[in-house]
Structures are given as structure tokens and as C-alpha cells.
Picture 1 (cartoon, rainbow, N blue to C red):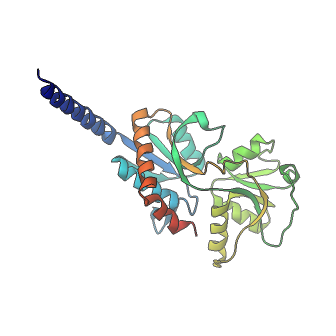
Picture 2 (cartoon, helix red, strand yellow):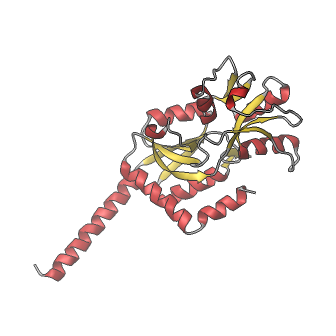
Picture 3 (spheres, rainbow, N blue to C red):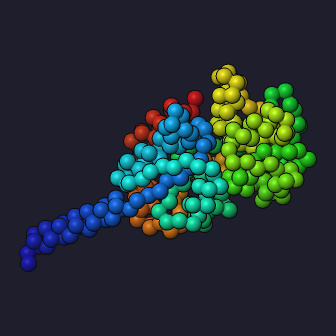
Length: 255
């Protein structure tokens, strides 16, 4: 066989392998789970939207995958992603505690975490230890709750857990808790939405700068997902960042 024929055969075989991989990855039905975490992921007029959702939808399209996004309480979404195959979860903080539990695709949105209070309140917190005597609202199994429990806080003693972030802000307004752990964008969004005042913001009492802020919020796959699929999504996210589509989405939400 001539060298030209060998090159042609090699090209044909490479094409077959490529098409075969695309067919396998494209045919893999991906389950996507998330929670109501405005403005990252939220249901508005029956439609799931938000910065994280738009990025994930663009990545799914770029990867040529089949997927349906379902919004549910975080504890349920987290459990499904931990125990099922071919599950993509977002917007999830990447922490040392979670590192080995998932296959990480990449960062889809920035985040900074604080202990917040209502306007007019001042707690003079200089460290997390100062907050132990107060009641703090958390969301079940989210990174804020996991962080505080790891620091020695306990549900029923100084933590009050619920299923939704807006419930925690309602507890704060009703005086049932003193503080509220949340990320900055979520806290400000809920305060402005509740008050109808675009200038109103949540009041940060303590910066939790060791709570995964550098990594941002991510998309990640369940461990029982093939490395081929995970890599395909990683490359799709990289292409979104490289060609400016990610920045266009972010500009709509990070105001």
C-alpha cells in the first residue's frame, strides 16, 4: 500500500472514530439539576433563567448534548448528583469537602459569601466566633450551611435550616433569625426584589473570604459520568470563554 493510501486510510479511520465518539456523547442523555438561587438560577414566569442557567444552556448546546434542566430544593439536587449517573449540577461551589465527590467542569459565575443582616443592625463581628451566639439562617446542604457546620455551628442550636434562600430572608425580616449566610449577588437580588427598590442592598456583617470565593460557582458532573462526556463539556465551556459568549452573558447579570 502506498504512503498516500496509508494517509487516506488513516484520515478515514480518524473520521470514523470522531463520528463514533460524537454519536456516543450526543446520545448520552444528561440530567441537569439546579435550585432557585437568583440571579444565578431562577424561575421567572414559568421559565428557568439566570446567569448560571444561560451559561449552562450555552454549554449544553455547544457540546451537542441532550439535556433537560430541572429546578428543585438544593438538598434533593445535591443528593441526585451524588448518587446517579450522567447528572450535571449547577451552580455549585467547589470546596475541599466536595472536591472528590464530583467531576468538575468549570466556573460559570463569580461569588462572594457573607453573613448578612437587615439594615439598621450592627453586630460588630470581627471573626466567625463572634457569630456563634446569634441565630443564623442557612439552606439545607448548601455550601454555606456545610461551611458553618464544619466550623462547629449546629442546626437547632445556632443554625436554622430551610429549603429556599428567600425563606431565609423572610426569617430575617420577621426577626426569627439575627443573621443570614448567603452569597453577595443572591442576597442583594432578594432584598431589591422584596423592597422594589433597586438601590437597596443587604448589609454585610462579616466577609467569609475562605468560603470558595476564588473558585466561584461551578458546573459539575456526578462521579458516575464518563470522562469523555465531562471533557466534552469542559471544552465547550472553554470555547464559550474564548469567543466572548460567556462575557456577553455575564454582562447582562453582573450589574
